[in-house]
Image (cartoon, rainbow, N blue to C red; front, side, top):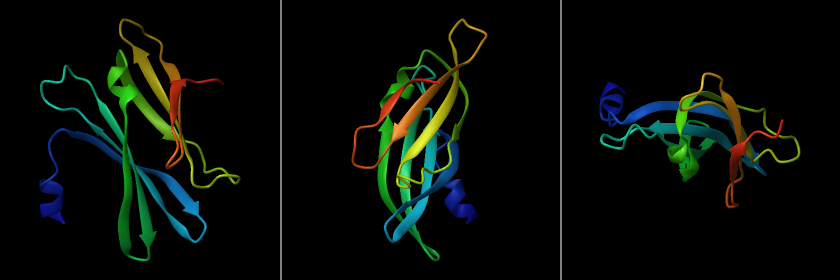
Length: 126
């Protein structure tokens, strides 16, 4: 296991399991990754991965970059997921706390993600 961790590129800044998903008889977890490549002006790139779990077997189903994150003019303080929806347990809702450049107070942004459909990202509507 140590070898696997040691082979991660140093540009990977954060990896989190943010919640479960379920679609019929399939289920798994959502994983997020923040990468910050060298020479990229400090811009973070944010990815969501859908991973299917079946006992001790794991299968990566998809990887999606949320491109708007790299265009944010500010710093991500953190993010959290809402509990899965009873109506749509195969979706993901994330809330980001972002401090705009030159500001002192964070703003909340939301990401609504559903596999195979366009996602939405922008200021929180709450």
